[in-house]
Image (tube, rainbow, N blue to C red; front, side, top):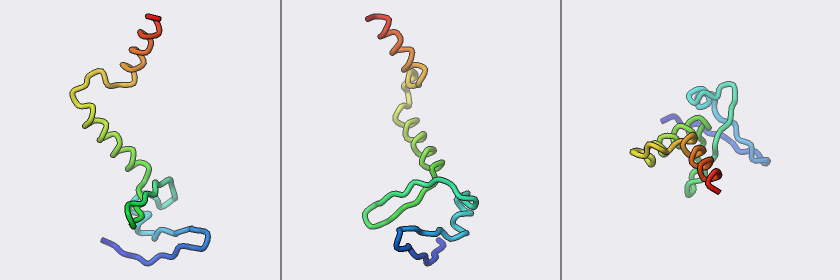
Length: 83
């Protein structure tokens, strides 16, 4: 684990050390998600959050063949036609 000292400015800005940005693919900047877990601040890339959300959805919907956006929309169309 790499550890660096950083300072939060009065306006709340924090500069991430270059090795951290490079390791996360943020060398040229990018969007991140900042989370507070107890007294820890966690910073994750948006891409990582999306990958984790997709993995969770896959696990939760395993064995559900009609769990897709297309299936959902088709069901809504059928419901609308029945009314």
